Length: 389
Image (tube, rainbow, N blue to C red):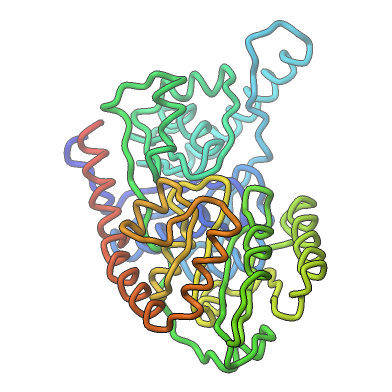
């Protein structure tokens, strides 16, 4: 397939859930670009949920997607053991795979592009049966592996693996022993456009004092995101300037996210900074970005984080955990840090106290992010496909 191009192709984009996280924004942004630039016919499959959040539904419509195909939540973990439970698992897995193969084949896809591990597992197992010429394993950030028989088979079948940061390839290198020639690092692209909005009205909407320096962390309310660390560091800042902290996620995604949301609200009260924090859920990312002076992402692990790219697009200084994907975006930067409360507080203090430093860092980040365009991403993806298939 040395001359593969997306022009006039039928593309199946396979996501996990219909909520507007980083992987889902990537998928929908890609759909929009492929439809408009390459005249593609794009079908969207959600493997775990066909009930979109409001933000997802609106973003999908804007990207030319008005139908989500859904075939029931998969059960795809088959162990190397003889038991009634494992036989039931095997039956459920085969039933699901046959169903999705039968339905996706009706789309006559040329390529299946998955996002995250379970969609990658499914795509690898079915792509040849549905007539697609190519798919790949698409590892993005913090995502679980099952290490079961179906995953092993899928990894063996997949033509190549793409991770958005070097640490995403470790399982394929160390556990599955995939040849290096089949492993690629391809950071994603900035999936939103910068829109300049009326900051005064937005700050009023989000209960942010108009004359404050605004620090923000846009991230899921999940255990691997360290909102608590940022709250603790923020509470220790000593300054005469007005400062405000904004969190944005979706608290209603699951019991876990609601529990995390309630926990950080309670923590802010115990730290006596509740009045200086806006706890947002389900709001527009672009609206919140228009309000920020400093972007923060501290977390357990990341691939190449969409939100750091979005901070950079909006010309913000960024403090981020020293993960490989963050390093790839921000280096060289003195604001790549370990997950340490004192260090984070010191970096926040420095940016609050130095207006010129905030401007300088923001301008540098806006320049760095220019190379992470969707055009460059597609060019690189074309090259990978043509070099491997």
